[in-house]
Image (tube, rainbow over the protein chains, first blue to last red):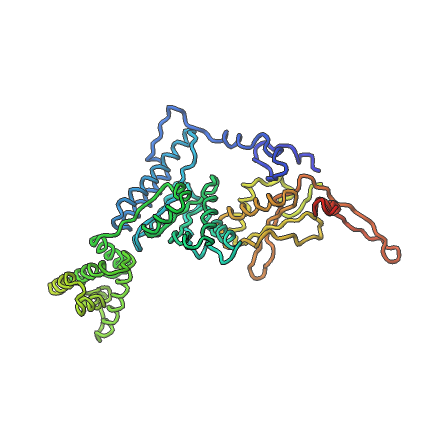
Length: 350
Length: 142
């Protein structure tokens, strides 16, 4: 045996972890050298938060959040609060004030298309900038990716998803599907238990975000009190108002290098008015789909023009493209909603 | 006798943080990792028992470290190594492997001589750890 084999080395931390030999590995020079390396500020020192270089990244991310996402005032406020919490936590650590790592597991509840996934992406970037997680990536999973097909299949599957998301954000979309009260032998419960275990552990630098529709998430959390108590941040995404949806449509159209002409814009506003009353309206996602269909109709119109096209032709979506929607036909034919119809007619004729 | 096996075996033993750093290096090279264990460190025993399946599709070392710790907890007295496989065409081989656990007591090897045909003498290496049946198979097999 090499002579230096058992001698404790001064600065290079602990030896290979060996449960049988725990006593000898936990000798001097484990935590102490690490703690001694850090230099803390004096008690009367002052710290200017605005000079923190992480803050600049965070401000960039928050600014992008403001520009890209319309509305969602309470979500943005909550994200800012979390950013501030982490910033202060960093400052406290520079003074050597020990405190436990803040728990940042979250639940995002909101209707379809209210921007939960987008906010999760921005959240990951912000947490990364603050040094809370190691990489700004979001691993999105649903029930299928976590729950196994047979006994003993669930745990490895869930652990693989957790390993994949390690150091980043694990985004569980439609998390309420994990819990099926009608079937007590459902493997979803096992997933929840494994997730809880992982969320408890201090060293895991992973943030779990549960996302889903508000009513069903409420039942999900009330049925799993252990889970609810370990998720300190519940963020509710409100449905967009008509004005916000119009703003979103403008942003989307501009993002695709298109634009509405004056009457096209009015027509789209009227379309949104109709569409919002329809069942299965999914906010920004419905807007995106509507714009895609407008592009289809615009393309058809341009092809049928039978004349050379200008750049202006190619980027403009006009009233005709919007009014081609089946929604306008239906409301005219059947007159389901007389109010909506009269409004459409008046909009269309102005 | 300290077993010199795999990369870094002439260095001081790696800490968990250093193991994680090596694992990260492998992941950055797109080498999937796997974990193997054995109680027989014979030099010709090249295929050790696999701990689970190879770990594909990881970006961060946490998942590998969790598996290493699970393997350590199950086999506290075994040798455990981590292998990184390079799947590129033309390489398709183990790119890196190193020990992450060795037993507290490493008994070493016995060199034996055997007489072959025409009184030719051949040598054989025998690892002591395989002769302790109680350690390998439990006391009921003694």
